[in-house]
Amino acid sequence: MKVEDTALDGVKIVTPDRFGDARGFFSETYNQRRWEERGLPPLGFVQDNHSLSRDTGVLRGLHFQMAPFAQDKLVRVTRGRILDVVVDIRRSSPSFGRHVAVELSAENWRQLLVPIGFAHGFCTLEPDTEVIYKVTNFYSAPHDRGLAFDDPDLDIAWPVAPDRAILSDKDRRWPRLRDLADTFD
Image (cartoon, rainbow, N blue to C red):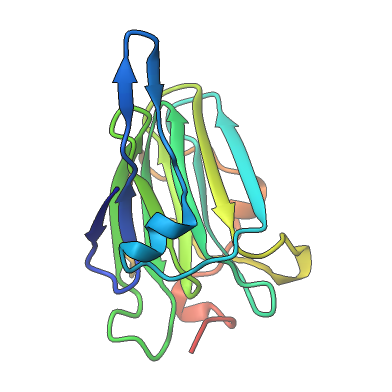
């Protein structure tokens, strides 16, 4: 397993080993022992989520949950490609409001670790893209929050124009960072 730092403290790119032969391949996408041997924090994943986005330009996010249901996430793509974006929403952080964008695909086999205190979203780069992610807390609608994907203060270079992005109604209504009441300290 290869672990890479990003420009945001705690956000990591994790690429599991793949062992292939004429039949295909095998990969341990998560192994707690190997995880901790690489210096990654021990995480108790409790739920796996799986999404399918039919079209290129589907944008999901930017999402997070507040305490006591805040979640760490481990995101990977099993079919297609995405631009995965993480925004630091920890007010006391020196990188508050900054983001990283990482391409994840079934081909590059990368995963992205998104710690608590970050908003997360992605945009599909290919049709019929499937994303699977593990989380450390259960979904809770009352604690579900989001951040405007097109906030000009974030300056995220999405691969689709805002008026062409395919979003849920809920994702179109999230507040800008400066208007966000709930953040992390």
